[in-house]
Length: 626
Image (cartoon, rainbow, N blue to C red; front, side, top):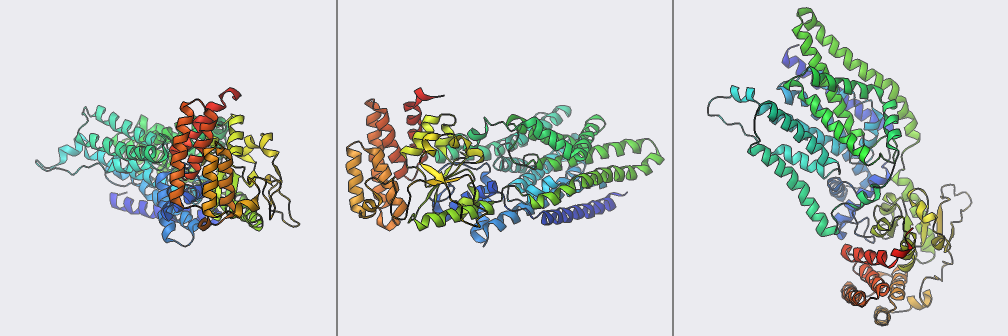
């Protein structure tokens, strides 16, 4: 085939793959998963002016893994009518747009398109894993797109900078060579934590090419590296200033988890044998018999290796359908395309007959991989239509039912300790969420495995109105000192949706709340000035824990207009923080802890004050570690 007809063939095949992926995603009809709703919650709250937190009433904790996707969701939802539709639409659009970008890797590496380049897009379309997560509201589509763009720019610049390309340029003409690859790779670092690994993989390929050409790194290499590190480092600096942490809270939650990574990878291989084997064979061919025209296969293999390293390092994932492996599928397709191209070039050297047979061999290899993937994987799509992965809509519906019960008892601002928080944050924007899954709660994350500190945190700062103790919150389910205050939620006749893991606070009625110091009626009768005076007296007398419970009660049952204003809250928080420091220096650690808790809550859960309170709690209860 001539170059131009082949380019047209690639365009048609990629367009077919894009249409196929869209049809596959529409057939799956994946609802927004609850984890995607977490990022959506944070984005909405940011653009509502409340900063980066799950919802306006919750802690300032980095409970998301994708800053760039969170920002994009917030921006999109702020101008859209339905936030969940915005999340799905953006994710699907990015996932589909990634296909032509990955298909361009071959042209970027060699300078012109060939028909086998379409393999990287064709094998993705029937794959349920990629279609599922690309349309689920997660960051998979954006991650795939930036991986594709970053890889294409790296391959393009490597070809432009090769000795052969420089020799063909006219004397004195300079080619504009910038650091766009660094921008794409830097943004990739803000989409997923493993983005830096992909940047390292691309840098390794670049270094190997420099070594082969006997060239030293120049200004472009420095510019790309500094751009990538500058973008990633700027967010790290922001995280330190804003969240008072060097790493996201999700790292501390998942670093010690074990999701049975061997079984995780084995199941993926069993389900997607065709794409894994064809991609591996393609990478081997690209390494063994390929040249610079096939280095896109090496980059695809390097990206896949980086992604696999991350999965193994963090021991898999709890979700079905291999969310962490989905963005690696196009990389496997690119490796297949490069390997097929290398075999085709070798056949062309064997003589006219082999050269004429080469296009048919290419078509056969692509059709075999595509057909095998479709035959073995598409039936799974039909099953997934009826068994979606934790839809945020189901979580939101349960939250609304609980909120109705609590509002019937007069609760204006509920405190809910739940492990599934994405749909909850969307449904109840005014609720204070205690994430028993720990992603969006600093204290529970820090005190994992430390029962005494966990119990003290939940009791001393005001027991929540309701608990949900399934899944990630099983540690809470084992704390009898907490569950003793709760009873199972009574299921109404015909309410088949009520969860059996739900508990509500014992004694909570339409008129009484045992958690309120002096009784709920007495607290509700206080004016803002009276509440402020009573709390200040308690703080001066060292009754900081009672003062905090008084504040919790007033905030639960009173509208904000009847509470002391924000200026009073800030002043009181500062005085409590100063008193906490004095108590700590005097050796009164427990009093220092209680005052620090007051300072944290009244300062709208300032991360630095929250971290100090939990450090004190850890010290106070150090002797009770398991």
